[in-house]
Image 1 (cartoon, rainbow, N blue to C red):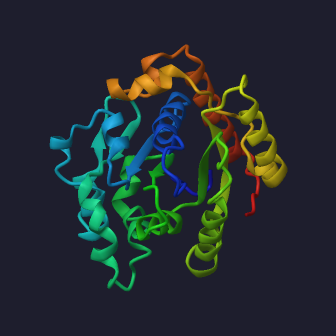
Image 2: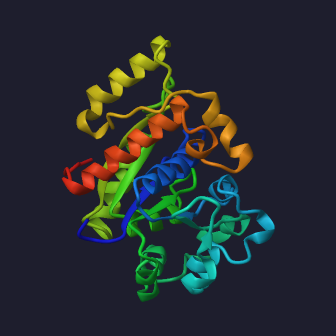
Image 3: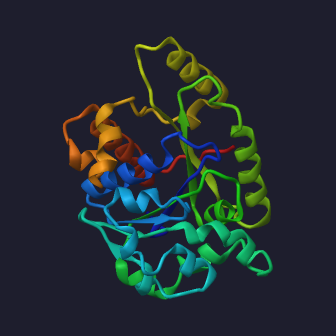
Length: 267
């Protein structure tokens, strides 16, 4: 990677698509590959923080403080229980972020600027993953302006492709106005059930409409993936041999391999 760390936003304004689960487990998969990862939680629900074992009472400073108040990285970057994964946690304070920054002239660049402060170099991160809220808010725009690329988790359900067009338009707007280098890393199909005809149809439609933008790896509907957050662990740690863990390892490798031989994706 020529531009270190590589910043990847996980975004989809539709909730319940496996975005946070993918953020946590992709981080774990990249860490298994020997990469040092920072997960930035900018979802007011704070599920990435909880899923990596950061208790609410331990979140003294959060991504809200980083974005709105400009506090230093040393005050917000926290260790997790997983080797080579650190986190900037989130809590419900983020719910008011759009109102709190709307009058700031650089309101769309606040996260971009924060993640490029000189003190970031001392951490030696290879990847920064941003877990976005399920909305096309100023927080999501901040993530898109900060990121090198966007990964879109897409649930294998009937209305899966609905709403994607709005996200793609937002990405194009960000390219035109603030981040011309932003690319789409890919669309990853989640909750994939090979026994289900609907899943096969959704996958066929997605690949027909978006071609190579759809990642080769699919994430199965797997009970171990669902259980892992209640133990505050990625599925790769909770049950390393499960189909869910294997899938997220494959996704991490697919993404890491692209950094060695980058492919250009266009919306």
